[in-house]
Each structure stands twice: as structure tokens, then as C-alpha cells.
Length: 402
Image (cartoon, rainbow, N blue to C red; front, top):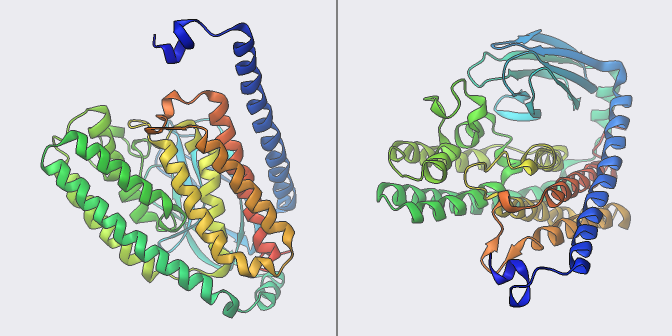
């Protein structure tokens, strides 16, 4: 045991220091609990608003029941019951774009997805990535047609959306360069350099996560965890960044990873192209950010995402960077709606950043498996609080259905 662990001159911490540490941990847990209490009330309110439209979907090992369904436009709730043997995800897709999703639904349990849907025909995913997709038809209503006519003109959002595309172009180019560096290190058999290059690529990917996660098929090829493949890490279809992470950090070798890195680099190049090709509607601008933050709060804060490398904290910080970019682009519009929504978002971002910085040392962020549970709960609470604050922006801008 080092002197850093035991205190000055190798002496154990005093009872007073220990009691202060325990009190600090307790305060963190209480604070996280209060935020989750608020978030749960918000979720209950959303469920109550959608109570008349709850649709039951049961996921079996290889399909959804029903596999084809129809709902009216507007607020809807979907109760997803997992009757398969694996933790699964369920998504609503508009072409290649993710409209709403829920990951990591445990076997035997259910989760509710709340979604305000526009008329149209959508695809739904049903568990494992190899399972066939279902379909979802959303029929128009008088309320949905009136809401569409009442939405504000796109012209106010042209500037922010255009600037965000420039940002995505810059980050997409940086991601391709990082992917090339990762591939080169793997081909050279340099494990240490490859691990560092993996970390650099992950930070960029997390920075643009709200945009990249909308591209379902590409995101699955680049970013899917082993859980969503039938044979997990041994499944031939398991590829992308997490397959590389598994080899570099769990198996601690570059052997066999060159073809994976080659395919990943092609996918990253395609991602860069697709990020520029896909249009983003004003109301989707913040929806994608909220969905990404809630995924962080509910799934990734436990350490699911970087389970082999434990590089979660740099990714969380990169997520926050990407969120701040979106808010800064919308800041002039939000300033006209009154100070409260923007002040709430800024306060939530500041708290999240402060709690992340507290876990950073001279050599960078702590490995996530060394982060105490109280701090993990605080990160989850911070992400949920920020998601709730940003969710209110669409209403302030007149984009949300009333």
C-alpha cells in the first residue's frame, strides 16, 4: 500500500477523515437519488400523457409479436416485454435513421418507450441484430395534421443546422484519421500504440454520438456490443470498435484484428459521407441528444459500453462536448424565448462537467472500474437531469407537440 493510499508518513486515515469521506459519498448518493426521483416523476408524467396509446410488443428469441403494428400519430407508449433468453434492444427506424430506441432490456422484464410519432411507415428491430425486422404504420390524425401546420418555419434553424453539419464534417474527417491510425498500429503489431489509438477514436465517436447513432445500420457495424450477437464475442458478425476493444484490452493482442480494422475504416469513411447526406429536421436536433444522454444515464453509466478497456469517462466527457456544441448553436434562438430553459440547461451541463472533472487526475480520467458506485450513480443522475433540461427546449422553441 502506497503513502498516497494511507496518508502522510504511511499512517492510516484518521477517523475524522474517514467519516468525512463516508459523508461525502452519502451526499453524492442522496443527490443522485433526488435527481432520479425527479426524473422518475417526469417519466410517469409522460406515461400518463400516453396512457391511452400503450401498445404491447413481446420479443421472442427470433422475432417480435406482433411483427406488424399500426398506431395513430402523436404521443404513443410501447411496452416492450422481453421473453427471449438475452438482453435485447428495440428500435423504431425511419429508413436508416433511429427515431426512438431502448437498449439492454433484460430477459423476463419490460420497459416502456414513449415516442411522439409523425404519420408514415417505419421499421422496428426485434432483439438480436440477425432477427428480421417488423413494421410500424403511423396513421395521421386531425391533431397531427394541425400540429404540422402550426410548427415554426425552418428558416430560423437554417444557421444552427448548417453549422452543425460543418461540425460533423470536421469530426467525421478526424474520426477517419483516428481510424487509420488505429488500423496502422494494429497492422504494425504495436499493442500499446493501438490501445492509445482506440481511445482517441472512441472520444471522437462519442462526440458525435447523437448524429451517428441515428444511422442504425452503420452504428451497429461500428459500435454494436457483443451482447447483440448470438454467440457474443465469438460470433463472426461481431466487428467494429468493440471487437477491436475486446482484442486489444481483454485478449491483449493485435492478432487477427487487421481485417476488422480494415472493415471498420471503410465504415467510418461511409459514416462521414452519411452524416453529411442525412438531413436533420429542427425537432430532431435535440431529440437525438436527449436519446443519447438517456442511453448514458440508463445503460452506459454502469460500465456496459467500454467493458474491456474501462475508458468510459473520456467518452462521457466527449458526449458532453457534443451536447455543448448543439446548445451553443441553439443559444441565440433560445435567448429569445426567455432565460429559464437555457439557464436550466447550462446549470445541468456545469454540474455534469464538475463531477466528471473530479474523476480526472494528472494522467487523465480514472479507469471506470476504479470509480466508486456513488460517483457512477451521480453520473447517471447528471446525464438524466441534462436530458430532461434539453427535452424542454423543443417546447420553448415551439417544436414540441402540446
